[in-house]
Image (cartoon, rainbow, N blue to C red; front, side, top):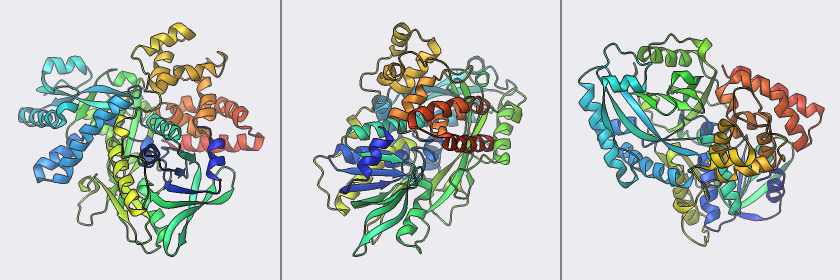
Length: 537
């Protein structure tokens, strides 16, 4: 998955079966589905793979506890099906990407007796809907046990707790694994290439004019069909086809903040069932830190949204309500904002009421647009999109969808004790070995072998990330900018902004060697990355 090699393939004069615009979870899932059916596939992403919504999630694989409550309260079949689909897909992801996923117990603290039967019954129903894909049974916790699991919980007024299970995953690296797996099946996938216009013949979309945002080069890509999988930017691409197209989406912002790991137990999360405005809030262990989110507020469309001060205050306020801790902004190590694409409904009172289900639209020009949905159901969304594409564009796949049985790169020969093998083979510290094992799975040894042992140095103090990973990201994971490495190939910028700023010059130095950057390009990367990191809070 070398970017230069992929670019060469993308510039060839050929007609692909499919051109996919958008390199998030949905677009990359479509690429894998289509390529594994034997179709020829090209994918372009204007920024980095997973740079937007797909790397800014709550890191949960779930059916959606809140969606289930809405389904029951309002007899909403859309929400009900979304939960069932999510629980099924959760099980498939745990199976096909074992290195990037895990089962996570979550505790819901209850401060009134009426909540006990209500919440417990709801989570039991959640278990029942999972069926054979279930990963654990909900159970009531005594007040004492809830405080043992979360000692920082406010004890005053606490009546009981409910423990249930969901999945947790590394979202950005999941997209990286999707890109690698799709590439193995023949897809050509390139980041930092934007669609600037659509090509039409006799009124039908048959390709796109594209622009490499790193080199400045432009060219045309032709395809039998074009799929718009750009998430929150779906309407923008639709208007390349029809400038008068009515909006299909609204967007909402969901922010997350990261605190020191002391604020969450290492293996248990917390689900706050109802905030002051009726939302669900999570406090989760993630990469040795505490991840808190999320908000759900109307937002404007932009490439790099910032975490608003009022949204950060909202999260801190609710954590303080449930924890015997005095928190302020000085405790925040990192923060980020992501935009969610929501199906437009002019009668919805707020964005929390908009459906998270996905939709597919085929325009008169045959531009196929897919948007909405949520991370956990990306594979099902991809299947639906390719099924529609096969019919719409009269394609001839060699077989049907079989992505439910395709292990993602890194998961094929995954061993639960792989971190111990890395310690014994390479002499790594246990935390470094554990990180490599879960980030790369059965590919972890390749990261270490490329440097011959010379780059086993840490990028940042108190974090388990190696300099060798920067080189590997450039050679094998299409990293083209410093922020590609610091935010998505590694999660350092999402965990500890100050550590990322400290590591930045060394990251650029290593990338300059791999990608042949001159002094001007290095200075530009330093400027852009410092600006992005500074704006994160």
